Image (cartoon, rainbow over all chains, first blue to last red; front, side):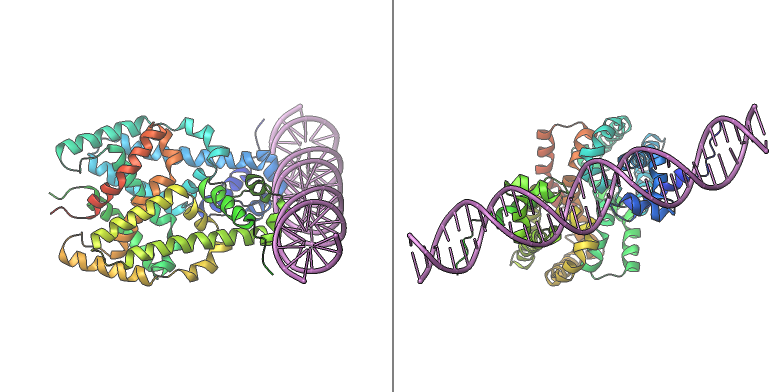
Length: 197
Length: 197
DNA sequence: TTTTTGTTAGACAAAATTGTTAAAATAAAA
DNA sequence: TTTTATTTTAACAATTTTGTCTAACAAAAA
């Protein structure tokens, strides 16, 4: 029994993801999602039964994708610094496409997050934290609780992108100038987190 | 014609603020807000006419309060470093009480933010940025676009608090341990942003 | 072709949420 | 105490949003 699979299901998921995590329409209605995807609203119920289940689906997809890519970085055979540079690159790319993904996770954590949080692999994170501790011993990064190191990294990466709609008017910079600032941040963050030789 | 002013209006505002910005119930219904405040839902309409106007009101209050306190710090007569320490203290206190305030601003920027963004005083920010540039010349902080410096500061302060619901399970730390980590961050951030002598 | 399976669309029902109106309760002033 | 303005409440109307049901449609299999 082959499915016809005209790609509608994936189209709906992609559209919802773009709308929610990309454009920040965190409470887009089923109608809005359907319109954006160019399908009848019923299709949405046909494939996902309910709005919540659609959201759950795209959320699970997104988390799995990101966590997989991060784990790859963290478990690679590179040096700690290169590893960190890779994490930055992966994260920045993801954040720029879907800036509201984490915001959504946090605000909806009571509805959807609780189940998902159990799924988070903290194995690779644990091992990355251990490596960070080693680096501190070696003196290449500042001594602190390694959790701080990781929080610093994620903060410096994510926050400016999330806050872009506020920062652009606040700092009176154009879209283009702001994009340039964001592009600079990769190197800047490495510079800030690693000691000079 | 004196108003009775039993404090209901303020009670509704405080409750809504706590619910939305404190607990992150970003789309609390008027019923939920009324229940939490222990008043009839109609009271909410009586004082604010509509849900949107209530939200606008608490939001404006919150922004004004924070921006005023920040401006005070930025315009004080202290040295740049002390000034920065004060900003950190003010910001941390605010973030801990209302972690979702900024998240809300960002996600609702199209609905409420646009009008408010005009109101943001960027005068004190400008002057603080200039001071930062001076410090870079003096060599007390790393050379970079001063906007980066400010974004770094805000990021390191805000993001871990926003992400707390995710980080606690991810790093497997208890509420108490996490609170301790947050408390450590003030000094840690200063350490990270200012060069050692 | 007919049947079967899977997909899409329109009409409708149900639920949730907001907003209005008019009346009752309350407290201060005359 | 009556009057008056304000505050609170209950009932209801309107709107928005979600979810269901049935029929039409399309494509592959019999």
